[in-house]
Structures are given as C-alpha cells and as structure tokens.
Image 1: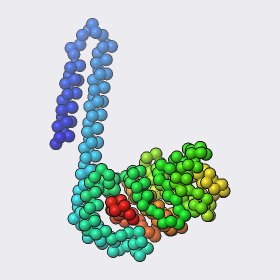
Image 2: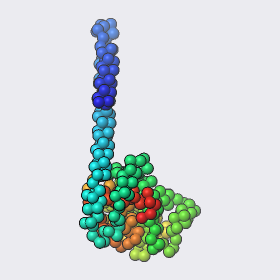
Image 3: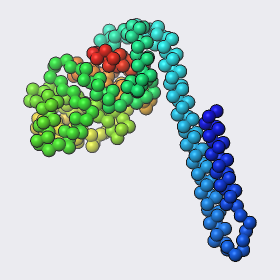
Image 4: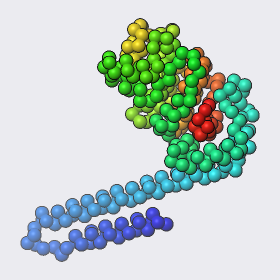
Length: 293
C-alpha cells in the first residue's frame, strides 16, 4: 500500500508540472517556444515512466525478500524434512563432508541468517568475499595444500618481485607447496575455483557453470604458477557439479575447495550436487558460528 501511495503522489506532482506547461498559444512567442514546451512535457513523461519503473523494481525486490523470508520461516518448521531426511539419503562418501546438525543448532543457524553478518547464506543470495574467506580459513589438512583468499591471487598477479615474495611468504607458499587452491571472483558476478598442482604441473579451473575456455584466467594462473615454480603446465577444465541457478556459485566454490583441500585428486561429482546446496548453506553458517569444520 505504501508503494502505491508513493506512485500516486509522484504521478500527481508530475501531472501538475505538465499542466503548468500547457499555455494558451501566443502567436508572438512563435513556433520554437511551443515546440520547447512540447519537449519539456515529453521529458516529464519520460520521468514519470522512469519513476514508475524504479518503484516497480523496488516493489519486486521487496516481494523477493518477503519470499525468501517466508522460505526460511517455512524451513524452520520442517527440520525433519530440510535436514534430517536429506542427511539420511546421503551416501557414505558424501557424509564425510556433511554433519547431522541438531535441531537446536539448526534454529541457531536460522537466527543467524537474519543478521547482516550471515544473511548471504540464505537461499537465493550470492556469497561475498567475507563469507568465502572466513570459511576457507577453517580448512587446514596439513597436506601441502595452500589455500589463498580471494584477495591474495589478485595481489600476487600484480606484485613486483619484492612484493610477490612477501605475499607468498605470508600465504606460506614455498618450494614444499604441493598444491594451491583459491576462489576467484570474475567481475563480481561469478565465483570459480582454481587449483595449481606442483607435482604433476597441472593448472585446473573448476566452474559450476562450465564454459569451453578461460583464456585470460588461465593466462593469469599460469603466470602465478611459473613465478613460484618455473615449468611447463598442462591446462585443464575440471569436472565438478553444475549449478541450476545464478545464486549458488559461491557455495559450489566453497564445496570444491573444501573437498580438494583434503583430497586434491577427488572426483567432485561423487561428493555433492545441487540437491544438497541448501544443506551446504546451513552447514557453512554452522561452521562459521562454531569456528570449526
């Protein structure tokens, strides 16, 4: 109701402005002035349409938020369906990366999802750097794998030799590093995972919306790999589960990094898929609240 009141108020104001421009034709003013008035009215008409479009978009966004909140509220009442039953149908291999969250912990997660810190883990919301990096900090299997955060890759690519050594040292990259894993955000619209294998000299990109090639990204990762260990590298596009929407790339990226950090040669498709992604969002939030995997 408030939105339509605003629409009516704006339309009324613009209508009054339009009417104020309608004058009795004055032959002395000439045709140019009359055309000028007509152009002003046309501009105001465009303003009306623009305002209406903005208000309609605002209304749609609020409706989407309302739908998301309703989904969270509904899931809160369906613990058995949303969590327990999903867990029970997981395979033994999948259960290695899923814990059965208790109903009380589930309620804590649902409360956290309503806060500014964790709301991006709700369904239909993109993950940001903060969520991505805070979760990857919790992953450490002490197996020669280094996980970069979403900023370090960019810094390393642009760094001169002195800065490169300093950043690499802080990230604990050295000649004993077997693998590097990192999330990569392309133009703030899509998350990828990349892996550098220094044992087999392979660079792999894992993308939950797989394309045929990644020339620029491969070029940058290859440059990074060769600055650490100069060698010829094979370039691959790895197989991984594919998302069925535009919102879950960050969750898929975190899942890929989690699995590959423990099993660098893992076949990712056997560990999860789109059907478990809501559970993944809940589990990521639960891990961040507990500060452990």
